[in-house]
Length: 125
Image (cartoon, rainbow, N blue to C red; front, side, top):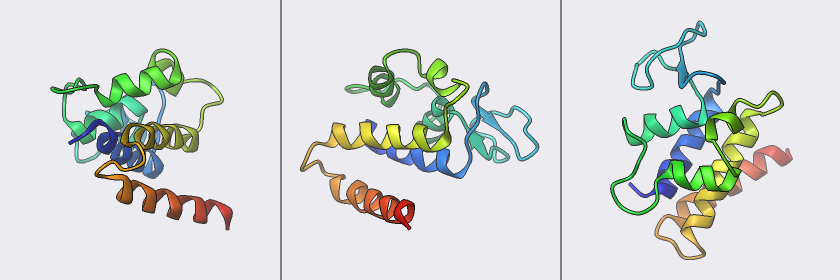
């Protein structure tokens, strides 16, 4: 799975449930493993780990985490945990980085483009 696909799928998880200060939480707010079937909310790094599996570094090329870290200008955990940070901003940033990684004719560009069109349409209504 490419780093762009990981970021796009991780953004979808963040949209379903986002958290700060823990990789993943259950429905009661308790800390759980990112691989737990009870995990319902994820921080940016937790969402990447859930999609990619344990160990967030990719075997080939840039990892999703490295790309996101570069885009936010520092530690992803600090960026995710900022007091005024929002789930929408985290997800949109992940999606933007994914689209930038794909370029105009990336193999997953259609999938990402269609999802972003749907997202912007929902936000506009």
